Length: 520
Image (cartoon, rainbow, N blue to C red; front, side, top):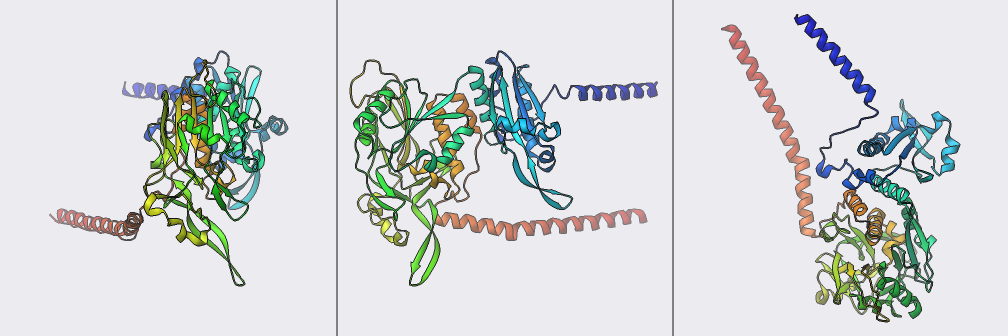
């Protein structure tokens, strides 16, 4: 009887295993034990099926060779499978190797870009051409993610693109490059690329051109000295009609092409208009001990020396400096700012104004003489004693904004973001490898201005690692470094040796006890 039961249990177990294998491609689940469920898609992504009336097909084109060489393709596939498992049949997942399926030309025609990477196989390093891109299809519409080599923003990218396809809407962002010396493609090329990969279509609007009232969001980059009254009037009309704008507006102009010469801007009306909305961009320059490095050439006699200094006019805004109560800066990743101006909030009735991020308490100002030469750092602190303290560097405002030109009867609530700096959105963001943090904030801003709160919540979950230099107090930082050094150099080796001694001693004691027991 016992043998028959054992055979029956064995057969049932085999049948269960075969059944599980057969349905494994239809049922997907995993247990996420990470803090904040970092590997579980958000509620907004799980509920996408409620908006989908037909079937969304997500095809992941990935080379098998890449899958064998790196775990990332498996993690990407797992994330897409989770979409399918929560979709109640509305999302279908397909994975294909373009080379094996002999469809490389068709895949590249879709816009998926092959990448050349080094692959180590059997102690040999070779260069392989691989694919890792995603095609999303819904009815007769499609969206392509040309290159997918990261999980950091993948959920956000997938959910935003699926929603756009299902709703048959474009994610449009208007941009006015308002400084005459700047060009969108050359100065803001990295931002343009990132907006494209995030699914936004950038609509460039010239200063003085009509702004469509249904435009979801607008970026105004600079313009304090170049926007005339008519251009400002059109922006004001867009805002009072319910428009949403990010202003990168600075009170100090620095000529990056000519020895960093700095001066207060000659405002033609933009800064006055912002003050009318509730935020004053002060004509000062903020300095902070939480500084980025500046590398430059120093010439003396017949020698040229490469020097690197902490440059307090290039500010590393820390993670803890973000406003945790605002969705834009919840779980803030930090920001890099270059020659930025401080803000003062004076909101009129009906407008809510909040700081988004601040300097450290070790910040100060230049209000009169704007020294920028890194060889003269001692001059930077001329006004430090009188101006020391925390400064507001970015702010968000919402409500019904009073017109700076005329009273309107059809005013609607809108949103405004102000950062006292233009350079943080341009090419300088790459100087200290801070582009990931800056781009993350800018894309969050685009989402918040476009009122896609649930998509913004997805971006908040997907954080880049923080800085290693977040402790700005020098004594405290030295103490932490010494403590870490002592732990790694002395305490951990001592504990390991102690454990080894104890285990050896216990083994000898047990051996002696067994020997004594045998003699007895």
